[in-house]
Image (tube, rainbow, N blue to C red; front, side):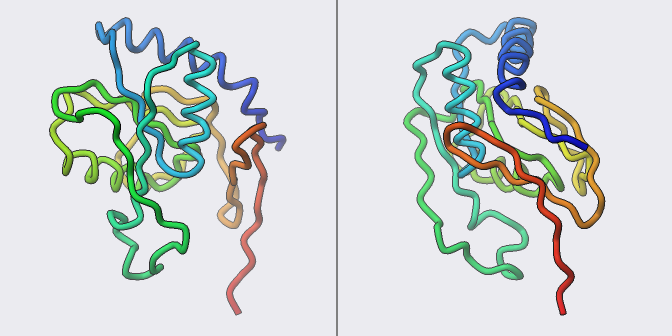
Length: 170
């Protein structure tokens, strides 16, 4: 299976997001990318939309439910939200949706900042391997991988997808 080119997915995602927002009467959404790949996708999507809206960034490391098992990632940085969360329509952007645990962590963090009016989930890829009932509202492509495969987003520019095969622990 050939992985899709993110540059080819972004125009379709921008159209789908515009249609989603129009259908819900949302005129001024606030964009938030989940670090790191989600921020790259958010930047590319904002460029595709021709928007100069400020971009919030979330680092959900402390909110993950596997924090005690996996430890702290060495590149943890603070989240930056240059706007209020309370009452806002948020566009939450991630690169690859797999189990749904990263998105759950992001929503927990967002609600610590306030109660948004709505949250729209945008994902470049949906790997159709959820452990939680979380689905994107806008998705670039849906893939099914073998149990030992993962997809990694390379960036920030140009964006590219790389297939990785997990090696068994010895």
